[in-house]
Length: 128
Length: 289
Image (cartoon, rainbow over all chains, first blue to last red; front, side, top):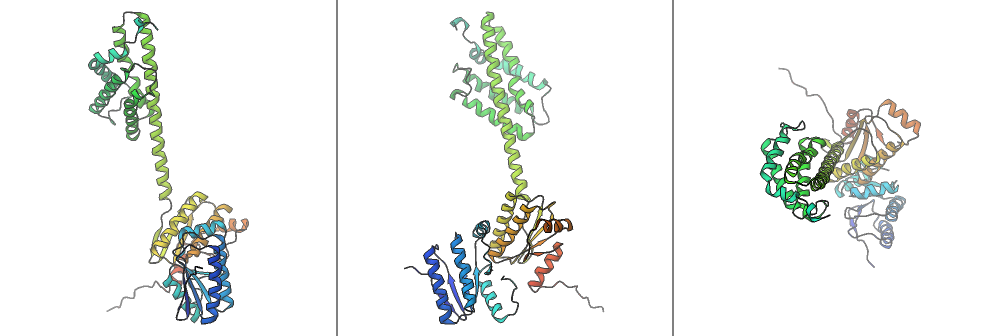
């Protein structure tokens, strides 16, 4: 079965979603991320969804779940690169993705994760 | 209808074109609806000539009653174009319709001269009146249509102009909103703002609602949606220009703005953005010699 690759970079995990997400793929990703956090003791997860044209409510929920699960496993999650149209759709659907941090691009997301780790300015550009 | 009552309109139009044109031009330039300020006489003459030659060709088809027919298509097109140009030039609808209706006088004079039979004349006058009335109405309709197009386009332009996204500082976008925020407008505001955020990768967006006269639940919800969408993209949204009355209304309406940074002035919002980006504005100290 198709899987979304998870890269291990320093202290963080890097997930780049390049294909259209369907429900099974999303749940598989959830499993993988949790397993990899436990294996690598990563302190942060960065999920890049800049290639995604559509995000439905289920995928959005899985993203939220991944963030919460990572939290329990002591890792922060940042969702980066959401497209304007996706953001509008999610808001119109009433999905606020509470509890997940967001950043404009991968670079900012990485900076945010590092900042969260060092606790320098904990809530500078992300959100709880 | 017997053959001796056959219409002479095509024949008159064909054989006396020059005379009709001269009379018609005289009629038009002396009419009260003439607008020498908007249209030069030469241009009017050109249009009249064109109309006359087209109606001559169209009338040859002998179906004078059906101006929707294919033989009238070139004339309809010409009148449509004329109405459009006159609507843009600023003519009124009656001034535009007069162009066609003033054609009656010269045509009727010629018809009277060419008929020796009263019945035939009455028949032809009726036909010519019906035809020219139809053409006049067609012109008016085309005129109104073009006016509506112009109005529609302007409304759209005003609509688009009403929500400009400006870059206040590197990475800080400003969106001054003036006028009521209905859901259609919010949609546009949200889209333009998010597109600009994606384009510029700006970290802060300041929505200034100083120019919004009243805020109702709908407006507040729409604002919240915009704030949430901005955050989903990974940028921070600040609402500024909240007036005392609006603050009161929002609380009375029970709008939950928890977690949204609100400031009373744009300057305040900018200060917040500066602070979070670790920027500072300070006076330049000039060393005195």
